[in-house]
Image 1 (cartoon, rainbow, N blue to C red):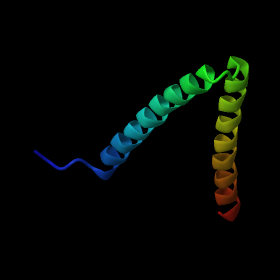
Image 2 (cartoon, rainbow, N blue to C red; image 1 turned 180 degrees about the horizontal axis):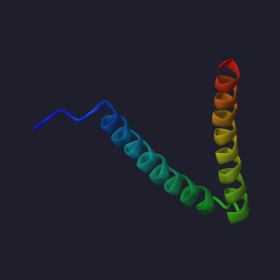
Image 3 (cartoon, one colour; image 1 turned 60 degrees about the vertical axis):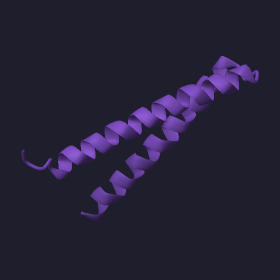
Amino acid sequence: MSRPSSAHLAATGLAFLVTFIWSTSFILIKRLYEQGVEPLTLAALRYGLAALVLASFAAARRRRHEEE
């Protein structure tokens, strides 16, 4: 049997990371809801955080293209 490629290992690692984030997000949202945080507030926080993460990736990519 051959060794997995680095791309395969990276993809597997990212799959585990996504699974971890998704599962902890479910637990966190469930606990916050039990504490009385409204569902729309939770949705706003979740989408706001996702927008910040995506914006940082977009900014890094834009800087990289400007350097080329």
